[in-house]
Length: 266
Image (cartoon, rainbow, N blue to C red; front, top):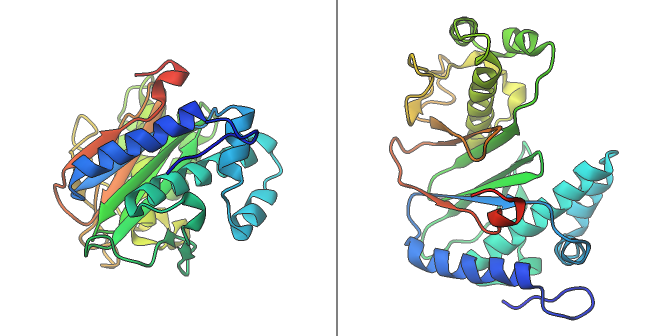
């Protein structure tokens, strides 16, 4: 795929995405989980290119944002998602059709090399995380760690009791990060299932050991709805928390970071 800026000149950074996506996907073997981290600080010309790829439905969703920065991040994120999915299928990103499930989780409806490609997307603080899996439903979440006064009240209302008690045992200097560590895991789980947070985040438990991390851990859900889902946290960047959830217990996770250097991160 070859893409150009709005004025017709080659888009160097977007072409770099194309080139890296192609090389990485060709070597990935379509196995395990592939996580892609993208910065959303595109130039005005790049923004024009990627936002021009969106469908009418995506443009309508973008128009509902009252915050211009959040609207721009959504448009860039969806445009880059189209680049990514288009690279897997060797299609122009504007040609990708997304289907939305009953809870709004997007999917593509055609197979790749006999495996059903599943994906999920999240953005926060100027960054987007995109997760791809094959034959396995996936959910991802990323959050920039921001202090706010009532996060313990939010945890009390949304965490299972064992999670809230675990949170309270954390040192005060680490408690906010622990909150986001649990929150992103729970978000990733409901996104993997597609049920959404309306299910009730307090109805299932994310297991933590003394260090707060158990690798891919199985979710405990008394109702059985989330049976078999596993979740793992990660730190995508300093000052952020992230998580990925799938049904496989110990999948291979491959990381890709196109254009991360443009924001001064490695």
